[in-house]
Amino acid sequence: MDKLLNDLVAVVGPEGVLLGEDVSQRSVDWFTGAPCRAKAIVRPRNTEQLSKVMALCYQADQLVVTHGGMTGIVHGGEASPEELVVSLELMNQIEEVDLVGSTIQVQAGVTLQRVQEAAAEIDMQFPLDLGARGSCTIGGNIATNAGGIRVIRYGMMRQQVLGLEAVLSDGTVVSSLNKMLKNNAGYDLKQLFIGSEGTLGIVTRAVLRLQPHMPSEQTALVAVPSFDALTQLLRRVSQELANSLSAFEALWNSHYRLVTTESGKHAPPLADDSPFYAIIETLGLDDAQDAEHFSEILQKAMEDGLITDAVLASSGAQRQGIWAIREDIEVLVHQLKPMFSYDISLPIPHMDAYVATLEQNLKAQFPQTGKMIVFGHLGDGNLHIMITVRDDSSQSRRQVEQLVYSPLKEYGGSISAEHGIGLEKRDYLSISRSSEEIALMKRMKVALDPKLLLNRGKVVAVE
Image (cartoon, rainbow, N blue to C red; front, side, top):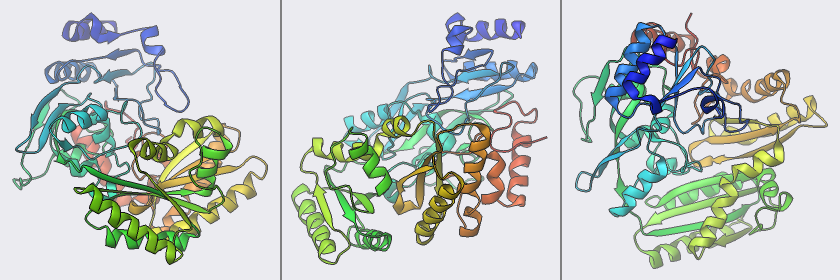
């Protein structure tokens, strides 16, 4: 290892290799703050350096774990003392912004927020958006196929990527920085790396699609009397706001009450006694016309009993206040710790029954300590579930995982909607994928990483 480290220093420089406390003081898990245990952290500044780093690691049969913004929650960044971490934090340049082509080319270590800001400077937008925007990186967003709050209109990260560049485990650079909307020349190789969690290659650069800036933004928080009313409301706004609906976020009462009344962190804009709440957002071009149409639709929904109360944001501060209730994950972590977090997806008609069954089973198994919070991107079938049983032992974790994941097979759901598999969900992959699919995943892993050096054991275990 010492010879390898010396060789790596020769490639990336002394400041590019971190050792000792510079490694252990870093966290590999946003929720728990668990320290990094890797032998070293290697920080290349460009694709050429990373290619040389990986070639050296390949020759030495050295295991490598990739790090981005470290906002993941499935232990994808976990590394043992025998492994090296490759961090792309120094590869953080915005290389080109193309107004005419509506694209932006960036290095993988650029944060999502910086891309959003760069787009705004040319009166465009990069539509992917999530609470960790200031910390998460584009490389991590690509590796996990991130979703966020605007999937209902713009799709997941996969839909935002036109081209990318990646380095394979042996140092080979696969560069396909396509800038065209249509390129049907052979296999679309970028799809191999989007959502692969760094197990097939390390994404270094990407060409991303930009969208027109929408100057009109309407936001409302509404109280909803039942799950049936919630789904009817979603259908109605999806139809009547078809060209402008950008988000439809559902909050179960447990989430809304905890973040507002119980925590005292956020003043509740609406009373906390409704079984469901929804945040509805539209993006458009004419503020006055959009506001009138938005208000009319919500008023009609209230008259029809789909909404019992509502508050419409009339300023940027009010809009931020509404979204803070949805995005303040730190409040949930503090109130529920120790806690287990899950992101699942399933057909919308099954959500209510699934949540009711899960809550019932949780109370039966942990009658004194079990507590569950539910919220999520209802419009795209994604629920976030946070559970505490006031014990984070491996036994309790396993019990809760069984409660959360086991029913999904019956409902045709997925154990991961947008956070990936990592180590945490690997043993449950068969719930959402067939044996043939998993076998093909393993064949792809061996084909692209024959020595199994990249993020070994993550997503799928190959013997």
